[in-house]
Image (tube, rainbow, N blue to C red):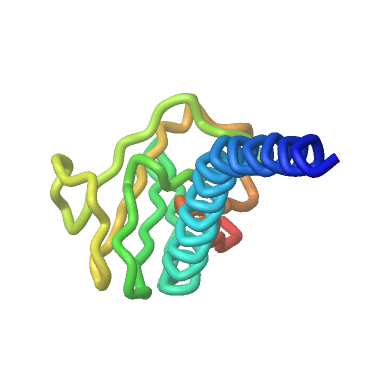
Length: 143
């Protein structure tokens, strides 16, 4: 009776140690992934909180629609990831310039982004535009 109880206890103990040694790396990996996801979420929230657009001007003349806006936040924004909707429609083609330079993609704080859309890419008699940045900051203006 003494050896069988001791042997069974040893087998159970070895089984528990093996199970823990298999489960621990998987749990540690899941915890690391969760922590990275939380950090990414917090970084995105901070960038969105630091993003702001101001001084939006809209001009519809000479066969084109021109939208000019200033980055009034502390975050850099991407000109390519900034969207202009005209009456809820995404124009097929557009040109962007940042402070008059067409070869820039990074829209830094206190710089002006100008988006130009040709009239043939617009709905007839557009009434309003919506400018949406990569962080979801949006502003709507009437034409």
